[in-house]
Image (tube, rainbow, N blue to C red; front, side):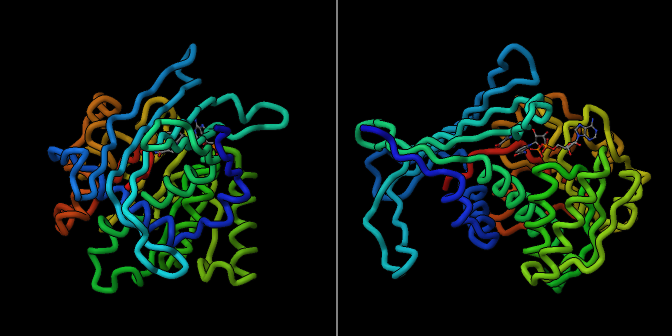
Length: 334
Ligand SMILES: NC(=O)C1=CN([C@@H]2O[C@H](COP(=O)(O)OP(=O)(O)OC[C@H]3O[C@@H](n4cnc5c(N)ncnc54)[C@H](O)[C@@H]3O)[C@@H](O)[C@H]2O)C=CC1
Ligand SMILES: O=C([O-])C1=[NH+]CCC1
């Protein structure tokens, strides 16, 4: 059987922020390690084992594999809302992170992804879905869900609470975080910083264009800053997605009071963009504790648990004004 290929144009057409945010929220909730039901169970169940990371020669060339299985689920027909027959999905997201790609002529994204879907009865490969954009959207959506549960829930106005947002690093992740956050929350001001300023300028132009064309309602005030310190000085929510091996922000740079940080980058080492004194003063949540045990073993931080636990158990984050969502990344199956 020749697998069906779903290219990036087709994928892009179905992605919207409400859809991706809701799917990612379910996927984060679905990460649990309770004894799973037998395969012949009537109930829906899922498996998301730890991901593997293979270095291909050196740490700047990585292959990440993220398998997932959901058994016995009943989806709804998106058009009619009727319940579809019970089904199961076996899939694996395969991501490469080759950090020299941006220097190629023409450049390629550093992070490339494909999602493989298998026949659950025979194991045959049925479909390959282009996953690069899904990864950009999924990662930003996970930060959005973390911001919703760790930060927005602190305020009576919830989602409507106006926020000043800082984006540190305006590459693929910086852009998807800026667009997703502005599409979801009431962002009153946004501060953009990138090592090479032209990328921050381009993101400013894109945001202005989308605002003028009423694709985005906010923000009305957009600033490009000369330093990360200027970008975070007023910010209540900070999203940082770079390959920086050194901390770009430290505790003294943050405003006092309620602040939430989504830190998604730093390449092969999945932390380091944020200084130790920020971790010392914060409580930290992750997407996957199983992956954190290996990938964050050198991080000295008060890791409280997973975002999924916070959502499932309906409990609010610890009573601390500074929270961090330390994003490692995962497949996003539920
Ligand atoms: N947690 C997750 O689920 C995911 C994490 N990532 C990570 O997010 C980070 C960004 O990925 P992309 O946006 O796709 O890459 P990108 O190449 O599109 O953007 C990277 C940005 O980082 C900046 N940068 C690189 N080195 C820097 C340094 N030493 N100091 C300051 N800025 C620096 C660049 O100027 C660029 O704007 C990477 O570390 C990547 O591994 C990417 C996808 C998913
Ligand atoms: O989850 C993901 O797709 C990734 N995490 C780190 C790089 C890509």
